[in-house]
Image 1 (cartoon, rainbow, N blue to C red):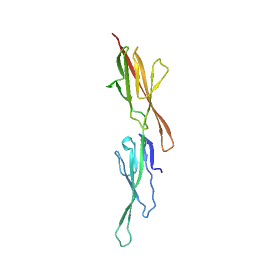
Image 2: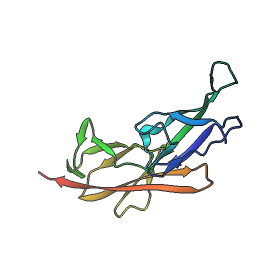
Image 3: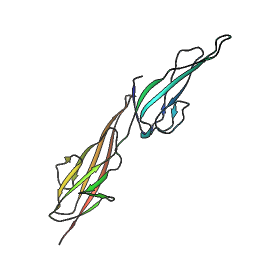
Image 4: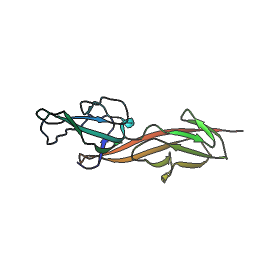
Length: 181
C-alpha cells in the first residue's frame, strides 16, 4: 500500500492488515476524527478523518520460564478524504449574503465573490442568462442593466486510490433584481 490513500467522503473505510509473527499480532489504529481504535473500520468516513493514521501491530512473546515481552511497530498512512463542492458562501461587495437574491441599482456595478469547501479545490465559472460567454474565477463583476439570473458553477475532479474517478459539481443560481429611480 502506498503512504497516501484517497477515498470519498461517505465511503466505508477498512484496512485489512497482516504481519508475520509468532504468535500472530493484533492490530489497532489511531486517527483524526471520531471512531473506534479497533477494528480497523469506519462505517462512513468524513472530512474530519483526513490526516495521518497510525496503525499499530502488537504481539506478546512469552518465552519458556522468562518474562513476557510486548512488541509493537508503528506504521503511518496519510488518508485524504475527497468530497464534491459544498454550497458556496457569497458576498456582494463587503456584505455577506444569506439568500440567493441580490437587489442592485440600475447602472451600478456589483461584485459577487463566492467560495466553497471541496477537496480537491473547485474551479469556479459564472454564466448570465442571455449572455453566451461564461467567465471563471471566484468573483464576478456585473454592470446592472436589467433583472437577470447569474449561475455559479463549482466543479472538482476526484481521483481515488481504488482507481475510480468522479466529478463533483454544484450549481447556485443568483437572482439579480433591479432597483429603479
